Length: 177
Image (cartoon, rainbow, N blue to C red; front, side, top):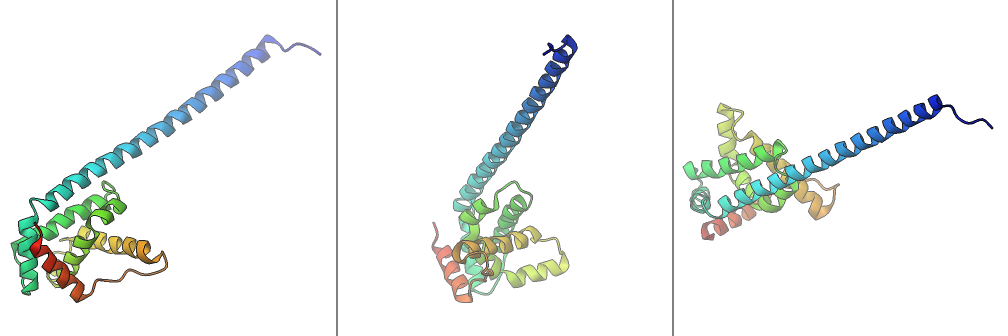
């Protein structure tokens, strides 16, 4: 048996070096992707915390005023402010800055109930400007799908809350502190 030549050993060493470099590059790419996902998730959680804080403090007077107006069959600036808040939630979800499961967990009940309570108001506004509250529309439908999947499984379609459910929710909103 003959010994390998220096050229063969050098070529083999070059191949091993190239394979090691490719594996290292692949590992680095994987780590960067994982870091990017973690950073995006962390930023989404931070955004969710800020939105939850705003909803639970600064938005309380607007929520109460909007609920009072809606139960009286009216809309006012507080109604628009509540819808604008949920438009921001929708914008963040629809652009991938906020995870939809996190948004569902935190905002499903108020978002969907206010969306249904305002369907006619939204329809009239969108007849004038189709872009108004379009992210809210998309996220409301998506959160309803998530709710149906969590409650009943993937094969059951989302169903809207009843008028009595919406009214009960609005009455609770008036009492919120």
